[in-house]
Image (cartoon, rainbow, N blue to C red):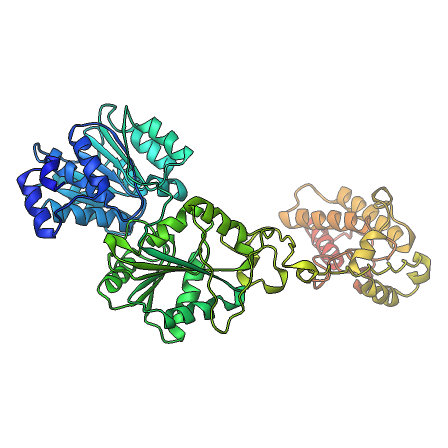
Length: 575
């Protein structure tokens, strides 16, 4: 079968011929005629089988007739990553160069003003990631009520990345009458539930099991200690005839660490992960595609949709947590009928994940031994965290293991992995507070003893709250005498007092209340914390000079104004 037999127009056939394509892949041969009929399609095929062309070619043929309106795209393609969206846009440029179709790529990390300008002119094909598309819609820059064709590409990856709620909202904004094309590398129960919600009487096209790996990929696995993984990777790169290779890590942080390690050992390497700026990500991909860098350390952001047909090797530095990701990772090599090699570096704690992968692909991954590195067996009892971090091997835990959940000791860890409990130091006994009578005669000794007492102990040994405020001893009697004297002076003073006298009386009242809270230590405000320096706005009693209050007398030459001035001097002296 050739592309002429699929019902494509002469312009598309000419573009395909110039691109070097003459025979369609199985997914293309089955999906293109169904899409041209206007039916919904549920397509499933392993990565690298040409799923992108199976919907771009018929879409170009369908959209050839018609005209786009401003801010109202005629078709919409949703992709999980920026790289996959950019690749779909490249396919439209390559296959539709003889059609006058406008397209817009709406992804994060790019200038929003330029994207808005494209939408204002009107586009036939809108290729977007869910987040940026919703941002445009909420700003009122785009209308989705004229979309005739909807494509959801790599739906299983959308599910893994948590984009399904955004996709469901976008679908709710589209017209009910439309053609929907749903493509995925795997068809799990959750994917089928989404397909039932989005599609209407779809035609299911499955050309090969979505969980199978390409027969052209040679697989192998080395089981080593965590500390030997980098040495194992470097040895494999040196002994293999590596033209170019993807090196996958589970976490973005490990991508940067491994990149710097390989750079230090003289390898020509670049890195790619989701935290990089879009310009840096594009530059990295260009360098790798042009052969300027032989190795690319990356996260799973590069496991989907990046079509580089001549990749010779794939190295899984970390065993993927989800078994389906293994299929997508090694699918980066062995494309277009070429032979590829996939090596996985596992630790004994990866046993359960390796078993899940082998159960999914239906084959046992052959084990290999690396020279100079001890080979180990997988531990089926060990448990690991989300990012591939060891949770059961206490003796060989790396620093990244601190991010994982609670540790559990398995067979491989034994008693060696258990961390001894830190013994708590017993609390020191509180020093008893001496009786008030023992320190009343010497205020200085009283202060020294109070300073030496621990703060917690003084708080614990303080008298009950109801006992405070009554006052006992010489200081309390003096405070009562002072209060009584102030009350008598306040009755004799005229009502025309200024604000200064009112503030002075307020300070006297506060000081009187504070003196009423004197505890057994015999001085006020000593229950402060260790970090407090000074006594605040209260001066200790032993530092206050006793100033006798002069008796109020009135002379013939005196006046009420002079009496007020004398009273002010008395209050200032007390303060």
